[in-house]
Image (cartoon, rainbow, N blue to C red; front, side, top):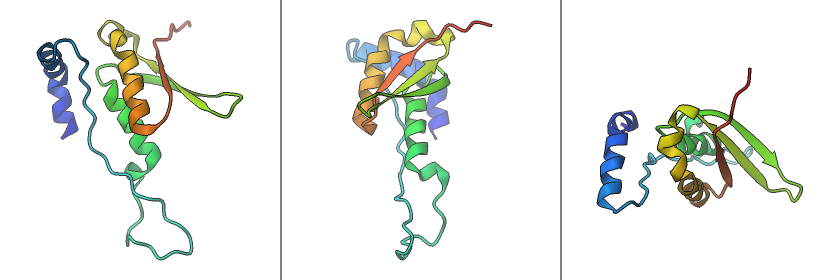
Length: 127
């Protein structure tokens, strides 16, 4: 169902941003995280937990949803000396003009939803 929304998402976002007087609009699909199975405890589910319901998978999918028109071309995780992490996300250079002014909003929304710090970049590739 998300793919159907993404076909019209750019036009829909443009119209909603006009209606809400320039505020940024973001679509994130509803996803479910299932708890990881613990050894020795009886299983609440009779089936194996699918990978699409893991915390990692759901958080990655949220990140994809947040910056939809721009495609994620790379990710780096920077571990700081104090133990905190910063996820650097490299976005596609083709969508830079459409997405660049929303990057602070994207990182704020992702921090609110997942508790993870994220920084978005448009890297210059050299061959």
